[in-house]
Amino acid sequence: MKDASEPSTALPRSLLVLGGTSEIALATARRLIARRTRTVWLAGRPSLALEQAAESLRALGADARTVAFDALDPESHETALGKVFAEGPVDMVLLAFGILGDQAHDERDPVRAVQVVQTNYTGAVSAGLVAGRALQAQEHGSIVVLSSAAAERARRADFIYGSSKAGLDVFAQGLGDALHGTGVHVMVVRPGFVRTRRTAGRPPTPPTTTPEAVATAVELGLRRRSETVWVPGRLRLLMSALRHAPRPLFRRLSV
Image (cartoon, rainbow, N blue to C red; front, top):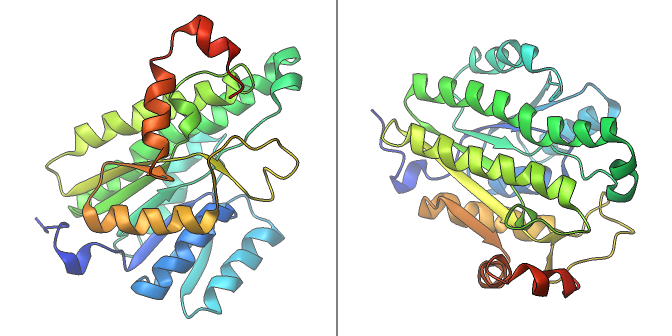
């Protein structure tokens, strides 16, 4: 069994991104390409944006490829990911897909609320299990899961999204425990409010961060073999305090 804790294997040579148009995922891919990564698979729904994302990584010297992947179609996940692993070993799987939803609208439309949950949680359960099994078979690799600080405690402003990320977070922790000792490393990343095109126009919840800052934290976490990464780091203490705040007090906080 390979020792993935050795410095030479801390960063991946091959990367599979589930959610290939994610700004955070692409920032992470760019950073890893600058260090060691040579092959990148971008998985997502076929689109011009997905092809443009792959082309932008090719311009950096990577062998960037695309593969069709739909988070809402778990029955296809085995086939989609199988195509990638059939081409050769994958050192890292970055689970980066997800949707924010619209809390005010989704509360009035349960079907849309369920779509948020199915994308962010049930789609991730399926893809995570498929990826975990494939990495375990090759006896090495990392799964990096983009969770959220919102997973720590339900907020009135985004409890549908937060609940889906809470489910994802707990699943990822459990997957890490299940794969412990197999050569597969699972790392959960919990960013705060990330300033991206997707969050433009939404009121930010301090402390805010950027895709590039998340990418930097992912690299450091991989080097350290971390199991949990907060971005920014001080968010860990803030969320610990909020998690233990009495509910009557928490309801009055503007968070």
